[in-house]
Length: 392
Length: 64
Ligand code: SF4
Image 1: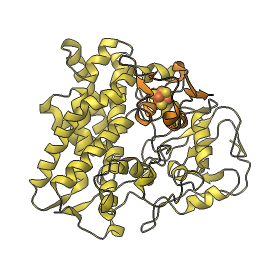
Image 2 (image 1 turned 90 degrees about the horizontal axis):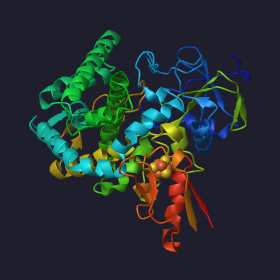
Image 3 (image 1 turned 180 degrees about the vertical axis):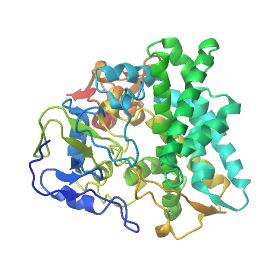
Image 4 (image 1 turned 120 degrees about the vertical axis):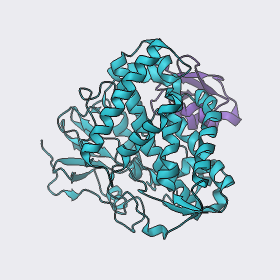
């Protein structure tokens, strides 16, 4: 692998007490070309920090999402992105045209209209989660008692997970995201248990179809049951921690900006402002390609910084201010290009319903800690909060 | 203004239907873009332009 620039910038770290995104991103955007950096694993990588460059990376057909390719960057503390040999159907790591079969099979399930039909069920789930929170007395950790259960219960409803299994499902998905207390072995066990469970669930649905996503995908027969297992696992993982992080960070930001509570425009601004999936869209060049004036050689890893793009002064006025009034829809919080988040309308619905319901039913909700000292996920692939002590 | 879409490029995230619901919808069966009004009047022109800008797959193009 060759990287032509001589000096590598250290991989950006988020520092406790520092505002988000890392202050360094602003310097990155000012520098010509791209930023050459070295991953924690020691591999070289290009960082892309400007809005237009990020959109270019995410739409150029000469740039691949396949983690099995030489040079693909790994930013995770554990395993990294699974390859399709590890989990068939993990189609965020598959390039077009093969990718399109998976995407097309799932699109109807996540359309704006279909998600609108799910709203009463999302509302019911959120109400149950608020009931649970209130049953705990007058204080709790909002992350583990509310922000994590909401997306897990919503997706298990959509998938058609029987009610009695939801607790199992929720506890295993929680194990996957808790980097603080979970060891790599425990994570591995949880993944295997979930894959086995999903496999069994698919068999049940093959015998007795229901009004759920798995049954409809089985009926369309575009994906094999084995591929479907991986797809379901992907839906679970992609939509779980990301949504929980957005919910928890959003509560903190809205409590600090209460004039925006009750305004649904806050949702897209929260998505842009926090850009929780900052380090998620990993890529590798398949051919030599020029981005932002820098030639990237075939086989070199590329990380488009989502928070970098979403805080680019050239695309957003006063980007570091939280201002839902800007109604900026062109952010790349969900990525861009063919892999743009399929579940984005579900996340929007969940966030809207969560904030409407939570602040209405718990009007005295307050953060029970010094906001700057909260345990932010400075170390994770996703930005978020490990815990959020609240009282009411 | 005239709206053109290349449905073969659509990745169905529904940004268009969300941004300009008077102009775009998603097909019930396939979830892919459907144009409700291909020749929007002046009041909808800005919404059409925004939809074309936020579409992640270059499916939507506009002409005069
Ligand atoms: S925004 Fe573009 S990709 Fe998404 S549904 Fe509309 S036309 Fe298709």
